[in-house]
Amino acid sequence: MKKLVIIPTYNEKENIENIISTVFALKEDFHILVVDDSSPDGTSEIVKNLQATYPNHLNLIVRKVKDGLGKAYIHGFKWALENNYDYIFEMDADFSHNPADLNKLFEACQKADMSIGSRYCKGVNVVNWPMGRVLLSYFASKYVRTILGIPIHDTTAGFVCFSRKVLEEIGLDKIKLKGYGFQIEMKFRAIKKGFKVVEVPIIFTNRELGESKMNGGIIHEAVFGVLNLKWKCIIGQL
Image 1 (cartoon, helix red, strand yellow):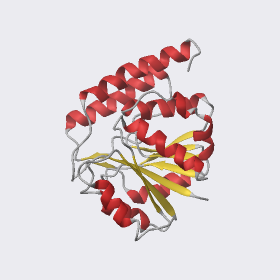
Image 2: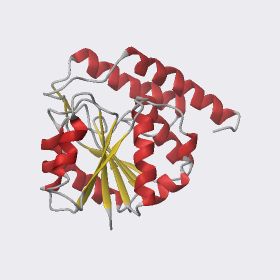
Image 3: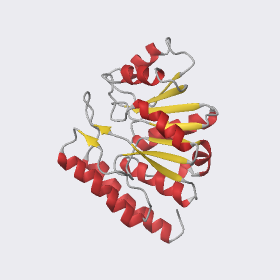
Image 4: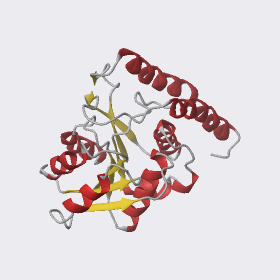
């Protein structure tokens, strides 16, 4: 079974080499696709240099337009399907997701269609986040659960394993939300398609190097994007 970890990047030169080498040190045979949005800090150049060390496992796409996390992932998903991967993972570059937990997500996905590395399915498992950020994230997931009626505790989670069939059938060209809203929309559409989605408890650790990409626009899109998803579902246009 071919397994691909997609890592979207923008200005991650402090983290990218370490995250790649850590994933490749795992016992499972993971491949990596870095989707870089033309980082001005030279992230893609670091990846290109590492491809000489990992010629069969490390792949790179450099996008010319920086138009959101969701668009970067969809680009990666389509590449993964074209290249016949069976399991496709989302993971951040900044070590907020522990690469060792890729094994847990993969194991969980053997009995489901999609597995989520969840911060909130067993309490609140977040390290080194300011309390305001923790509360924002936690209650955002509560808001999504209430509005959309989905049984997911961590609806904005970005550490996910998809079986191939989910990405084939979910309708990637229909996905419109770009930031955290993208993560919500993927989960909502998967559940509405009847796929089995499970949560796996993880510990999320705030980045130590580089800068967060969180901004007010991302929050605004998620809040109103959820309402739009609900409306589309009601009128049968999802």
